[in-house]
Length: 147
Image (cartoon, rainbow, N blue to C red):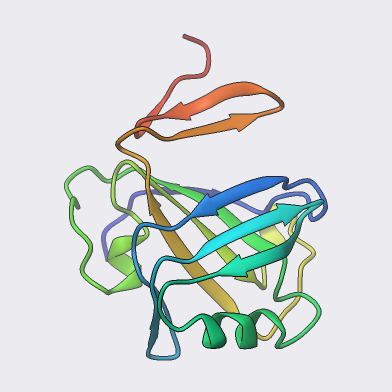
């Protein structure tokens, strides 16, 4: 498997904001397209999708931890440059980030427990930005902190 991601477990109640995923979020063989999530204090409070929204909502309601992020990661392998539908490749696409709803990795400090771990990937290479504590951290597929 190719390498190419930096990942962590976020503080469970710290995530505020929204994301609209550019790639289908595939879980259990079902592709949810156009997923948009709004987070308030670490929890998905609103969720919509263009395709398979009912499935998205069902998964979010599968248990108490499913509406929280267990993993936050940035893809750093710029030799992988297109979506394939294989999460082990796609989550490493250079210029993307992904968040996994549900179970986190305890070795990252994540305490979130869930029956799901659903990676959702967003292309960040054009007109996109991640801010941390009000400071730009990642913009248009590149790290910008310290610049």
